[in-house]
Length: 341
Image 1 (tube, rainbow, N blue to C red):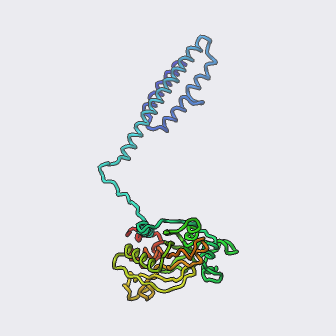
Image 2 (cartoon, helix red, strand yellow):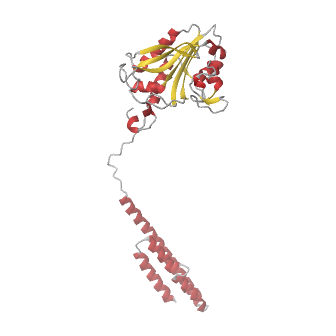
Image 3 (spheres, rainbow, N blue to C red):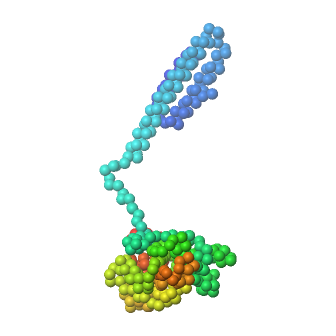
């Protein structure tokens, strides 16, 4: 039995030393030290030994086991280091090669124009006010002097949330002005940018979701001349001193008198094209002197104070700013388009 153990130790040492992989090494461990391994088989025969031989052979078996375990551990470490070295060579990186340029994002053109416009208004003494996009009809319609039966209150024009037409996606940011007037006393000078929703058909200049920048000024002695001077200054700041604007009489329930402001078409220069629908001008915003009923409904005395209000379509401002012919390009997330800005 002693000779058997010595032969096992010698054979195991040779096979472990020549073992080529971790998987083969595990097979050798099972072969010599497993439950059905050669060392275990020797130990099972110890019952036939005399009392004097049993401790001697037991000690030798334990010594052989420890020797094989040590050889296995040493070989396992060597194989692991060899595998790591091979992997490092295979995955070697040449740090002298120039790295790939990382693409840095930038603002969306709508965000760029919004920030420019906000900066202009802040420089003119305005502040920014915000409000909810899901609005009560009392704020979006009633307190803006928009009567029942007006087209904007139809289901075909507005995204209603409640069947009784009391709640809907706001059609304009004008409710922000009403909410602000209810909480602040004149003088008031604010703009209210944000998303608005109307059931418009999608085309080159319309979308069911778009952005507005609305403005409100309330103070003593405010007239239509103040409105015209303010809007002229803003348009020239945005688009340059050469910018041509046109003020046309119009009607809005919340202003009296009212006017629409157009900017000369940036595509055709006023001769007429598909973007301006042959008119030579692009409607950019509505405006006017705040109706006395709107002031009174917000708790402001219309006999003491007056004001003007306006609402700009941010998408159309962006199209004019960058010479974009189709509004749909702003929403398609096509990097070939967006990367130009």
